[in-house]
Image (cartoon, rainbow, N blue to C red):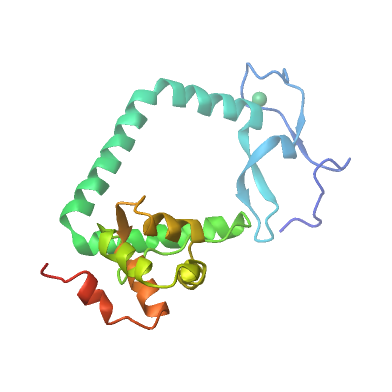
Length: 197
Ligand SMILES: [Zn+2]
């Protein structure tokens, strides 16, 4: 262990000459903070700096990336092709993959201070149905409660009115279900949209 932690930038900070002969520092000793760590002490301080300074090591990495662009792009393409193929053929993998993707996406959004996107539940799939029967059911009710229905379903009153006026051709079955349930008539779903009809 080092006897004392030396703050980067302090006068006592250790120095080192960059190992790259063409370094812009021209053999001038640079502080350790100008280097990436080759190893770290358990407390996170640098144990040993890398041979090249940060500038040279970044330039070297960028050079490598330029020279190997085609190779890395091909590898990335192969990887995603493989994932897509597995998603299509292995339902267990697909479910796990979606679960994980949702988890990391939600985590990322939370860290950005955003609300995670709602999960598309398998219980309310986005199955679209003909809006006609639902519009008729809406019209058969008192005109005024389009606002109430919209509130209960969690959509806009204008959306409900558009459905009523026949301006919308297809609706989500989950919306119909929510509206009927909200109105206390959940049993009418089968009547409006018979499964084998
Ligand atoms: Zn250098």
